[in-house]
Length: 169
Image (tube, rainbow, N blue to C red; front, side, top):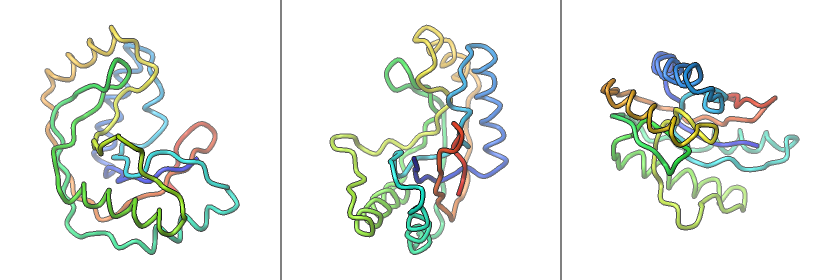
């Protein structure tokens, strides 16, 4: 399995990793710790490992728009199973999402867009392994922390699931 994302810079990833570790310590959740902090552009998909060089080639052939600034602020949830840091509305990020999906769809012949799911950029703190009651407790804890950060990025990354962890290729 692979996915494509804007990976947070190391200093921000370290801070977010501390948040994920707090959730693990208090609620036993580990799933979000299996990947670096990121904003997903193309959701996980299956691809033949022996042809992964094509994915890397297509990623290198993609022209990244300059000056992508991302601002994050606060936390929210998806349903009863996902806690995330909110990424503020950003037309450049939305345009990047559309163009990378179009680029990969054109190159591979696969359709990478999920029907009826709008792009909702976020950075996951807990996913699938948090109980609904714990989700509310964690959300309340992080709402009090006033999470406000920003970062610039000029790269996108291909991540591969290796041994149960997502690794940057």
